[in-house]
Length: 309
Image 1 (cartoon, rainbow, N blue to C red):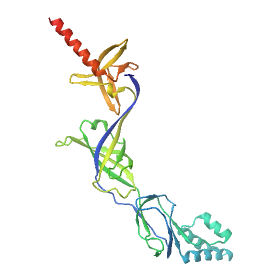
Image 2 (image 1 turned 120 degrees about the horizontal axis):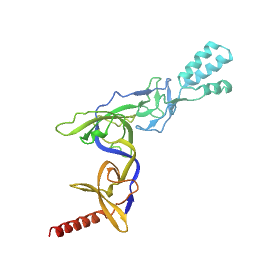
Image 3 (image 1 turned 45 degrees about the vertical axis):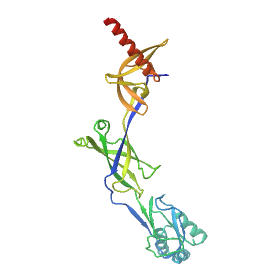
Image 4 (image 1 turned 135 degrees about the vertical axis):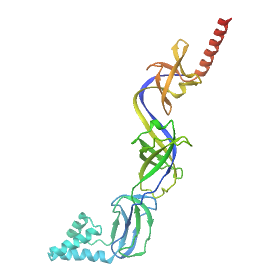
């Protein structure tokens, strides 16, 4: 089986283990109804799920909510502009949108329940009240967690450090949270290698509102480093590594093959960069090359023996 030497983009991916080095001060938002009443409906979102800004969280049956709307309609009828403006501001502070205020003024139909929406996007950290419970105006019915920048320190082998630089993209996976990935960036690298472990600390980070992230948690980090274009490359399986160097079997046609010494470079996935030894378009062997290489080596040994005799 053969393949062609190609020219194309290549990138290096470095997989390493890291840990959450510290936890920043959490950004939390408590969502209170603003009026006394009874919870008649709540969102089906549970702790750990995210909500968007403006998404309905729960509804409250509050007599004062209906009274405020009625007072607002009465102020409009009596043309009490100052009073109407004050009541309008109060209704807006409780979450009534401009379109709902206009409908109220046109139809005179009072909304029976107060719908409380998320003031910001975030993740539900805690529910403190449930359906049919009585709540006060200041009751913290639920708490939302905001987005935090999570710092992670990664230890790389000393030879990998030359490929890593600030700003490179990373992918973070957490073994205890299967199926979840986070995107982030390399913040900085420590150019001093640890003498005892022969490793290089690299500091990366990612942003999330997930409350399940904890200090000291182990994470798997993939650093997408050294993106380059127009690189001469071959399949990884085509390269033969020996103690004397690396070589590739070139197919010359008509059943003829030739071992060629090459200098490999960047490795990424199933392809390897070739710095020297090959040209674009050459046909190389990617399956069975070890048999060809060993046979050619044996023939060369026999030829040298015959020459010595």
